[in-house]
Image 1 (cartoon, helix red, strand yellow):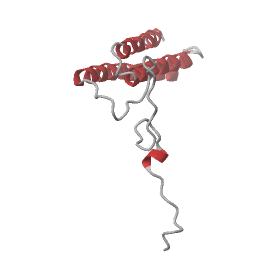
Image 2 (tube, helix red, strand yellow; image 1 turned 120 degrees about the horizontal axis):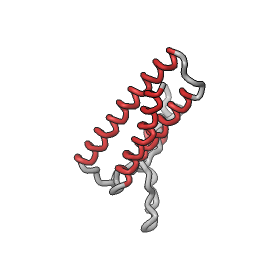
Image 3 (tube, helix red, strand yellow; image 1 turned 90 degrees about the vertical axis):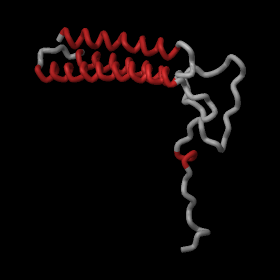
Image 4 (cartoon, helix red, strand yellow; image 1 turned 120 degrees about the vertical axis):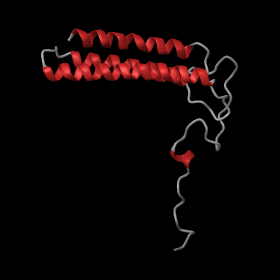
Length: 135
């Protein structure tokens, strides 16, 4: 086989262009103009172990509660007697909670924002729990 006519294989940065690709360093942001939500860059300091562990435990508890709500909602839907909007509202509130938790991890290098977002993620989940218990 002639290697001069072979097509080159794609490298990882060409396939998955995230912030850590070495080929194109990103231009630094002006002072005070740093993004609130972003994937950590290669040169970012690692978050503290306690911080990451605490956020992960809290998020896993949110996830377990969400699974419980989902199972309860499924059983209610199968059993019948729930209004037509029930499933859609249950799913929407669950997605809002997940989006807030994802935002918390994308802002892990901020001081208070991740904790505010994780606490805010509990609000739609609590509404989900109240809705699931009601039906």
